[in-house]
Image (cartoon, rainbow, N blue to C red):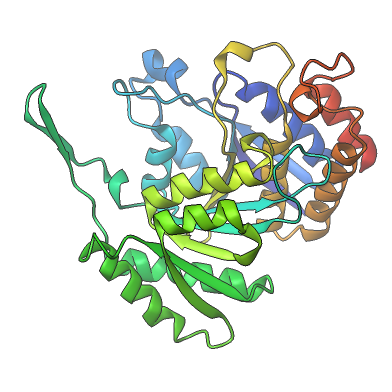
Length: 339
């Protein structure tokens, strides 16, 4: 079977890690036709927007896309392309597995967490304004029953489908009694439909402490948008960092996959950065397409190459100045050979 996938290479190191991902995915033998479209700062002059309509139309048509990292200006400039994609395509679930890979320098072993983050509302609705220019600004956080039911059901379905036993609802209901009170009550109501999956809940700051102390106690976490953004990066740190963590943005019958790290512009064109997160995002994409065997083969090949520790990028060496470190494409070559 052949698939058409929208590919957004991204900014900075994006094209390099995207190329590595393409090569590894193609090496599985799954037939992919890549429909390549640019987005981000580089296309603003041509289209007047970092996210042209034809990019969205391509993803809607193909039902699946994958993207490299895209730079988001801090404190000014255009709105995040990632946030805009999620809202325009109703990609309401952000899925971030955080799993230990032997050989990756990390503070823990055998961590196996999955973060399910609500992707469309919360603080990221982008409703903010100045109250007193230069002195005070205000942002509005929106939590709805509809979006919470949807993300809670996604978390429980994911747990059931993947043999997970527990879902933890993460909130700040002791302080944000209305918004996070609604979030927690709604998750508890949805949990009644899944008697085979245990539910517990944690206040977000306490959860962060417990994740650092004993991450092995947790399984699937379901969170609102901002908390999910923060906690998912924390969980990436438990297993070696953003360079090895894949990501998916999933809606009803449509999905966009992406590494969760930034575009690292200072490394652009140097063939230096770790492609693991993008390659593993490609494996998530294959799993979404139903190509589970190919996805499993990629994960095993990645684990083999990292476990051997020879043909890996500098950040995966015990000494980051190790002269035996290889480049982005050379690590992809090793993964392809391991396939």
